[in-house]
Every structure is written in structure tokens, then in C-alpha cells.
Image 1: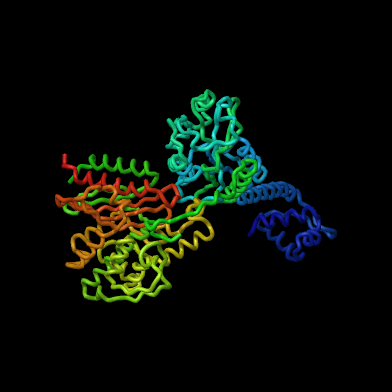
Image 2: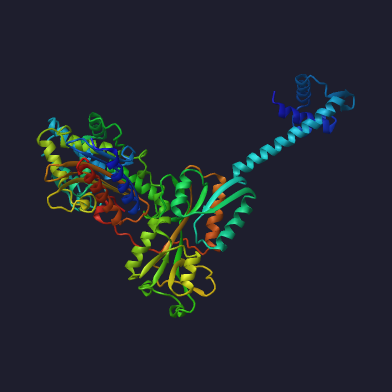
Length: 316
Length: 295
């Protein structure tokens, strides 16, 4: 016997006080409903209703069981609702990781958007460098992340890639601060604040290659995240300049774009391949929107041609 | 037998070199005379890419040795319908007529995709897998020829850019479960069989070894051995983020070492010299460890 269904019939008959009206409400035939109520009574070994000429009335035992029935049906509805929320990503726990330098406005917009899309989900957010986040995603200790590329790709799936131009953070009283934009070559001979290589080795190498290509030979590289106290002090005192995406500059500093946008950071959402559930999808959508606006990341990459060399071995 | 500790030191340095170059790397090296080995992830399956041409060539010369195929037979190669690629017949424009052994030369020397597929069409997919099974290399399996691998690559790339990380992440040809595959250990075992005359007896083994010494690429395995008196034989393999080479290094004192290096870069750039060079660096570290006097 499907107990839950029979309890629903029992509740309907009790509420209507009449088998015919209850059958109408349930859209089943009256004889069928009568049989089912009798079957429930047999199953429970209890007479639930006193049958009279003008309808049915709950027996005292039936009244007691109706209270329990309502409780069972309500908690069943709650269970099904929670399951549906979990299934569709509107509830649960989502462990997310973000890279440094997305900007507080973008991160705030992301959190707001995600909460609106999935009000029942507890979101655990951490800031992690790309090497750590790729490892944690493949070990499933993080469900979804925003990563900066190049990111180890084995076992991961990625959302669309967005592009974040990198500029220069420098002391407001330095002579170069008067210029609207700077060339990379202008930074030759300066101390340059750049994140530690170990946190994103492939991106670090890519940046050094680009600096050299554009005639920038820094006097020294300071292995610091540009938001750290040491890095801020070095920039503020004019000892160093920092390469960073557009940011609200701390007091005493200004941010200037680079001529021709030679440096861009590529960013996308990432999750373990095959483990992109609905909550991950909602997070990825919220991230995509928040990073574009107000984050200011661009959907289109700078259009650069690709020229394969013979040693490439495969056609492009 | 060499002690584990000296190998452990070499393995740590190899892992460091791979990390420094921004790649994950797998390596197996074996001394062809003593049988001493050095392994770093040597049993992990990888997508072999053009390295699999070595299996095709081994099969070709093995069948020639058995008298089943005449290597001087010439094939007509029309100008159209060729397997795509950046070198050799794949890049040439006009109809040609070449012997099977010269197609073999092009397959190795410049990794010619058209030449390799013409040979593969002659032999069949099963014959190449059969040779590997005969040699006991049960994890070395081809599921498609070069043209089908390239078709899958094109299909997955679609209108996207092959350097877009999101595109690279969905390429099935990088997944050994989908495409032609092997392990570093099985590739050095294949090279050992070629060098021991077990794969292709007599003059045919010598002919295959000669071809492996005529490969033109200097940027991978060969870059680790900048010595005029050291001979480097090899076959490369390349796909987006994958850079491989397997080969044999011969020293003037008679030392012979089979090395297989498979790498996968984090960066998606097509041109990444550091990732090419670390194949030579890692191979050299391994060969130096195998050559070090037993302490």
C-alpha cells in the first residue's frame, strides 16, 4: 500500500466530511475512494469514520490519527521541497574560491546576484591562488571557482573566458602619474611589484615574456601581491610601481592604463568536469554577469593572429 | 642495480624542472645495456599524438622484415584529399609519387601527417595494434589515424580559438581514454625492442634506427644533449598543451639510453620554448643519473 497517498485521501475525506465531495476534489471515482479508505482502515486496524446518511464523521481514533497524518504530510512536503531546492541549486552548501584582484565591487555584486538566484544556499567563499584552486577543484574540496588563466586544465571544465586589462599602480606624486597612459617600456629600470611566481607560474612567465617583448626591463621584481602592506608602502613611497588590473587606487596612489593594452589577464569560472550541478551553474552565471558589470572584464579578447610553426605538427 | 636514493634525487630534480617550465611531465628512461631504469609517472596513460607514428613505422619495417611488404613500392599521392598538417606532403601542393620507405622518412624527419596516414592506410589500424601486442605493449593502443584525430580536434575547437583555455579544456584528443595512447615505460620498451633488433630484425631494424636519427627538430630531446659526439634519435608528438618526445641517446663510450618524455603545459600558447626545452633538460637529468658511477 502507498501509505502517503492513502493518508492524503484520508485527510481529504476528513476535511470534506463527505466521500463524494472528497472524490470530486481528488478527481477520482467515489467507489474507488471508499474502497481506499476501507483499505487504510484495514491496514491500520482502526475505524476512522462513522458513516451516516448525510456523510462521514471522524471517530475519536480517526481524529487522533488525522493530527499525525497532517504532520506526516507536511513534513513530506517539506522534504520534497528541500530535495527540489537542492536539485535545482536553490539550497545547499556551495564551496567557492576566488582569485585575488577581482575588485571588491565585482565580488560584492557576485555575492548579491548569487544570493538572489539561490537564497537557500550557504556560500563558503575563499580567496585562493590558481595553483591551489586547480588542485582543490580536482580533489572536490572546492565546488566552483573563478580562476585566472593559464590554469591547469586536467579534469576541469571552464565557463567563457573574460579579459581583464592590466595597468600600473604608482605614487600620485611621481612624474609619470601626470600621464593619461603609460607604455610598458616606461617602466624600464623601475622596481616592479608582481605576484609571487609560485601562486600562478604560467601567468607569471607569460607576463615576463610580454614585458621583455615591449622593451620593459625592470630593475627588480618584488614578489608581492600588490594589495599587501609591503607592496602598498613600496608604491606609495615611489620605490616601486605595481602591475595590477584597474582598481580603486589606495590614497596617495593612481592607476594608469598601458598603451595598447599589452597585458590582459584571462579569467573564467571553473568546476570539476562532470560535477557542474545547478548551484554551480547559478554561481557561474552570477559570476559571468558580475565580472562583466560592474567588474569591467571584457568578453572579447584582443584580436591577435596565430601563426603556427612547422614544429606544431597539427594544423590550426 | 643503482640505489633508490640516487634515483630519488634525480627524480626530484626532474620534477623541479617540469614545474619550473610550467608543465606536468612524465618520464621513463632505461639504460639499453644494463636495464637500469628511472621512472617518473611512467605508467600513466597519455595521448600520444604524433609519437604514435613510431608504432606505424615499426609495423611497416616489421612487415618488410617478414617479407610481407616491399618498401620500394611507390604510391601515387594526389594533390587533394591529404591529411592536413604543417610539413612535408601535408604542406606540399602538387601530386607526387614516393616509395613506402621515403614516406617513412617524411613521417619521422618532419612528422608528415599525410605520409604517416598513407602508410597507416596500407597497414591498417589493427596491424599496428597487433605489432604492439606482439611486443607485449598492451597499453599502447591506436583508435584512429591522424586524419580522424585532426577531425576530432577541429570538431571540438569549432569556431573557438585553439589558445582559448575554455576551448582547450574540452579537446577530446588530449584525453587518453578517447584517442591514441601509451605510457612512457611502454615507449622506452618499444625503443629497446627496436634497438635490440626484436621489433624489426636485421637490415630493417637498422633502417628504422637510421630514420629516427634523421628527425630535424632540435628543440626538444636534442636540446638537452648539446654535444657533437652524442647521437640523438627521436620522434616528437604535439597537440594543444601537449609536447612529447621519445628517443634514444647514444654516447661515444657505447652508452645507449631510451627516454620517453610526455608533457602537458598549463599555458595554452602554441609557441612555448621553455616547455619544449624541458623535455631535453629532463632527459639529460635522467641519462646523467643512469650514467653516474654506482656509489
